Image 1 (tube, rainbow, N blue to C red):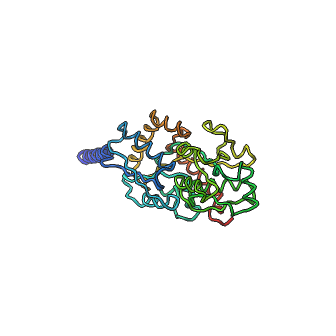
Image 2 (cartoon, rainbow, N blue to C red):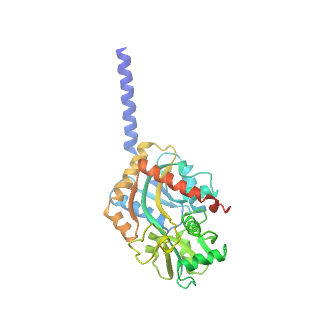
Image 3 (cartoon, rainbow, N blue to C red):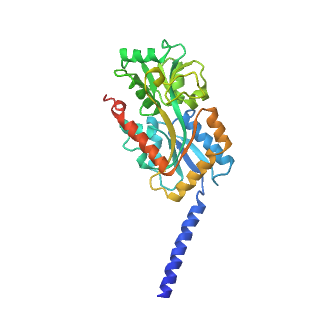
Length: 319
């Protein structure tokens, strides 16, 4: 009996050491981060910022390599991560489109199909037009899309964050509706707007800071209060059209990725988040300094999914 007890204890110790050894060895190779949009957009900026902060400070023993896999509001790249081996070597940075794409019917999965790693940053959106647009203010635009529903073109990434923002904006006035046309993410909306291919765009603070305001007119900010970096731009609510659209970047891994590896990734992101480099980057791009993990992260993702579910009929074009 004593010999059996000793053997059992030894086996348990060996198993524990083996698990520790596996955890200590991770990561042994580069970690791929899929950005499911094109380069130049807000998600791309966020990914590159954290990639650099982690590499410069050796927060991980292996580098993070970024792969751009655009398509279908991020769902093409997201599906690659969903179907990847749950070993911690394939990750995803997405956002509100994780729920938007599912509600729209583009995909049959949402945030629940992944292991959440962290939530970083928070930025709200602007409703904007070309500088040469006939619409001088938000009230003129809103009245126009009510008087001529489904005629005024809004450039969006169908099922994506800017699409959701445009839908929330139009929903602030019963009977109002844009004609939503597929242009792509933020990096594609800006040239489409300047080129006259669409009349209206919805872009986040970081993108506005990145491209500047040349050639565009900011009609409204979609946060709960004015952005300190753009104090002259009133909120939609201030102008009589209560609508808000803000997003946090969600970092995901495939479902069933070992929790010890999730924790390693979370810790690396949190350490990067607290560097002066990331803090300064957020300040320059007017991104709120927010970091979520654990229960707070799961609750935030669930709240966002519930809010998007409410506008599901608009996303699907059934209302």
